[in-house]
Length: 319
Image (tube, rainbow, N blue to C red; front, side, top):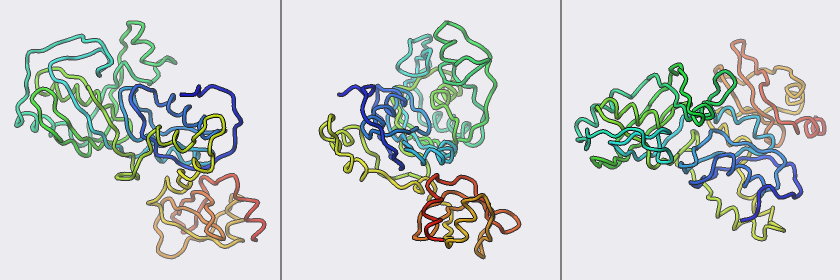
């Protein structure tokens, strides 16, 4: 594998990629590899996965980073396998065992009952091995220094929590949850309900809304599309990208004529089409060119919220 830090030309690139992150690499490591393959000047990911975890990691290039917050706020779907009877310092298989418990295996009926207690709105205490900051320091840095500090509970919502494959010691679950949910903490809290301890031994993110059921691209597929690392096929790679507006498929689309598009590009408000309720909309100009995101306000006008940088020149040409 080529060195992602090696110097090579960078280019402006806009779009969205649904990466199937492999295990054994951080989310940032995966991002840097993808950014290097595409020779992209600007890119970011939406929602970290632990090195142990695999699965959907949306990568936003260029102007798509303006809409990444909508994906960060989205619900996530996970498949997780737990091991009952052992707790680790990190909450997963990468950590060192710190506690064992003889209260295992777990019976199906008691497992289902305990899971029901953790559905809906709940409070979670973030794990020490997390990227949250406390007094300017990452919690995981404090944990590695042997320190444990008090953490405030955080509200999350567990929409679905089901048994995908029962095993008395190593059950597999599927979880659909709100942003900010720690699956490691959920597994530990489930074990506590059962009077035992547990940790995560396998984790895969199946979906980030609104991309449930949509195909992901493994790193090997990107490398195969690139071909020669010294002279990659950028055209083949670009064909794998989704358009900017793919991050907002559930927002109604509003098509604006040239003068209205120009007004919006200058920060002005325009009249919303009949029937639209308050909320976010996708704005398109002449030729159905994506302009960005607006918001329908109570007075029936659309105010621009986040616009792509290349709006003005094409609009001026069409106006």
